[in-house]
Image 1 (tube, rainbow, N blue to C red):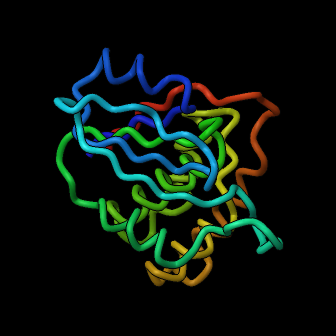
Image 2: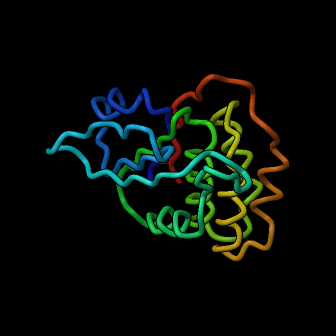
Length: 164
């Protein structure tokens, strides 16, 4: 599996430059999803706010959303995952998929690989906790992401090209 992880404003350019098999949009409930051509790759939209804890009036990441994301594991080809800034929701989804694909015992190495790929990556902690539970990692994913710490301040992240 190859993952391209990016901010929303890079989606059109990435679609033009790469052979993408699926576009995953992790966006706020009121955000516009990128327009995909009818002859282009299919899209999967998951709508929720980038929050770590439930807050009134906002939609937190849910178990069902993470089950849908983890259901992408094992796909062949290239999956483009984006959120607004390419820093939190999309990097959490990519890390969760990497952990699922490689199996238990690689959580720390994968978190360090994510940090090497993106200095700004700050995976959404609620998404990581949900994935950790769904994958039965007993807190190892949570600990690994905490260990790499918050990423550098950035308006948006750089595009990540992650193969595993």
